[in-house]
Length: 198
Image (cartoon, rainbow, N blue to C red; front, side, top):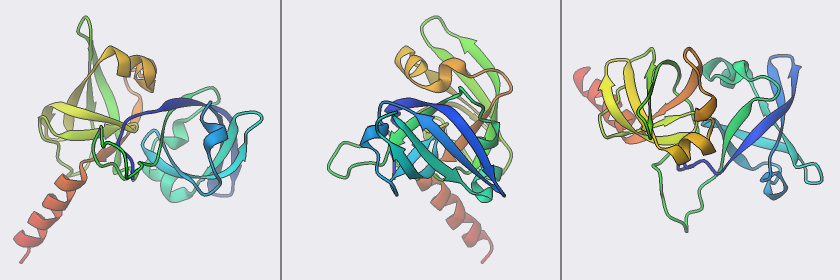
């Protein structure tokens, strides 16, 4: 369980393919605090730490085929930055919203507007998931508030701190991002579908 509040960024330093899986080696100042078997959100995708080298601040995670096809992980390249968040501590504040680290779909960045002090990003996606204005959405692991909501499209506004301390500063038109929709909205949507099919 996560909150969507990014703690740090990691840099991809090695990518190894093993059959249908990918093992990623990343480096970050947080690595020495990681344990093997720990769940860490990477651009909103929950991955398990499988190896840690505290002396080099490097660690490894493995993504299986199911994860690769449902996220933007296959787009990652050597040198890319990735948003990181360790799992939520239940004795702390929930500063973002409830995030599972289970990516629902991949969206496309189709507009970036510099608003002289903030940035407005617009994303499109396929599927029947819904967004609600002033509701929550997770983009590459970042908990954000929806500004504009339309079918298969939404916008978010990014403050300077978030822009600088997450991968939003390197996001470009056409880039694919991981999307996790609000869990409460997903339950309501499933309930309504079941009710309509009665």
